[in-house]
Image 1: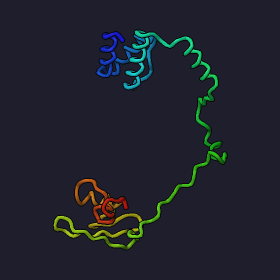
Image 2 (image 1 turned 90 degrees about the vertical axis):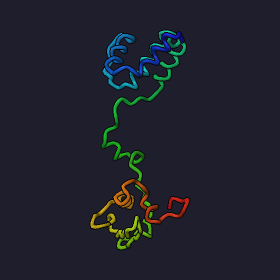
Image 3 (image 1 turned 90 degrees about the horizontal axis):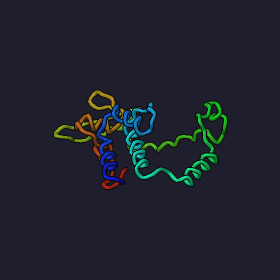
Image 4 (image 1 turned 180 degrees about the horizontal axis):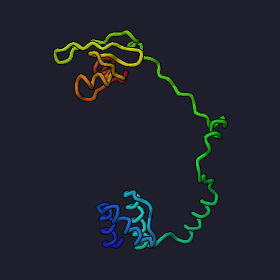
Length: 164
């Protein structure tokens, strides 16, 4: 690749989207509706390289045309009523993780942290601590420590070196 083309391609990511759109129009001969910077950079770089080094061979173009003709292309999404009536397209049942036996509703978790004793009550749908209800143990741990950490780890519910 000639050095001037390489430096031109290297400069593309530093251009603004409006400049990339103008460059696209210059190298392709038509404007683009796209405002996606990454896509514009890739397309312009490809076109600059193709202009400098040569485009696809006629044999390659023919092979692409064959592949496209043989492919089953869907131009629109399937209708919603079809997907629900077709058994193969029905959604698989969701898997439920087994409930943690240590976190039954009514259980009180106790932990000392920075000279303070924390008591967290396990509820049916959450965890109560200091008069406030949290959705997860990690949310309780974050409220107490000020930074994210695993609630199971913070309350000593994991074995060292394991997830559970």
